[in-house]
Length: 308
Ligand SMILES: *Cc1c(COP(=O)(O)O)cnc(C)c1O
Image (cartoon, rainbow, N blue to C red; front, side):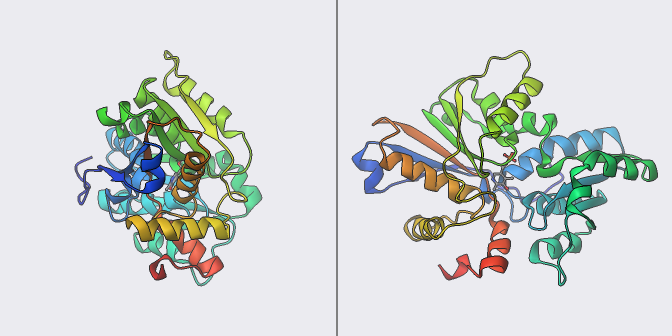
């Protein structure tokens, strides 16, 4: 969508250090975090398909979507809609903190109308959508996290020819939408590893469902969900995780976020140390962005990456 400016092409950055050299492993990071200062990595890719569809369908659309108080998706959606001149409503799970946190302050400054609903109401998002659909014409609903079929299809474009030559492509997973798109884009080249940011092993099933919907004709089997690196659950952190993110930043100057990419990279390093990747492997890890997620960690735990 060329109406949005300040996009930068993402690129592969090679990581060098003895741990990798000793095992002849080449590790690359795909810097999706750098594509835009506000519309972060995978959230842009997921939104782009939806925004295209919305703009094709109506000249005066309104977008409605859902997210938690520190949601990367609400943050990115607010910024993209502001640039495109699309009015948007963000349904926030639970109470809106007063004073507003940094994420929600940003979203409302961008013009997103924020509506807080109780956690139990939030679960019934179909009912909320219907209520707004009755009163707002040309209302388009994008689900929580931005994952739907259009999002999965637009995430296939993250994959380029160099990624197809890698033995492993690693991506963090929340809803699994980005991962499903990457699996589609890889077309059974290499193996796609998803690193779950949530506790439990239900995400494989989600990814299977998304693959069936988005690529019904294709037999996409070269992937696996890794569920060992959630560090206590979604948006939970451990001292080990923070120490890892800090040392990775110190060594390579790349800041990872504490909710998704930090956990993925921690997992990749742990698996390399345990020799779970064969010697000679090439690995591409996708930095999906999400650095505004530090807002939540800063406010809840007082940990600030700018003091690393
Ligand atoms: C939302 C998000 C993810 C997870 O994406 P899904 O498509 O929901 O699996 C990964 N990384 C970052 C930085 C995110 O903001």
